[in-house]
Image 1 (tube, rainbow, N blue to C red):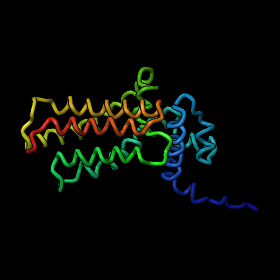
Image 2: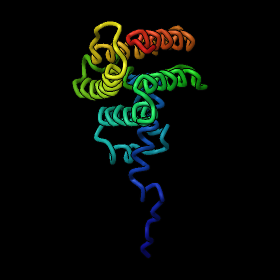
Image 3: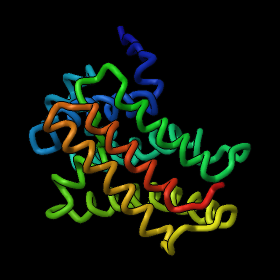
Image 4: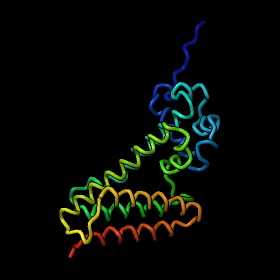
Length: 209
């Protein structure tokens, strides 16, 4: 007698299954990088078979790109509290952004890490698709910060001439570099100190009195 196969909730929800693979990939790659993470490890972490993996992603590289894109959306959503809060003046929005960044250093995780920064360092020189994906996310962060700096220039007289895009890239570089050094030196306090200096630097660009 033919017995109808049972369809599980997991199989009925391909989007959730795909997301489980991305979540597992992010967890593993933040710990050990892309090259050291295998498809077998991802499947085990996600509680899936290889067949399920390849149903959703062509290969590990495709999943890595999806993980970077997911990380970018997640980060943008977190920063939106400052970037999109029109009730705050632009300089206050930048202050709020720094507060959010400091908040990342006060979580219970062992290190403050960024998927985009890690993949940029490991993969950009050899994998053009990874380079493009990481560049897109870094550009998005920089553009949002540059918009706030440009708006702040319209409200406050600058103490010195500066290009908002160049300053935004400086802040992005300081943030990414601080996470790298903080991870290596195992010091989140170092990151917080650098962020305070960055905030003081931004304040010092404007005449606010």
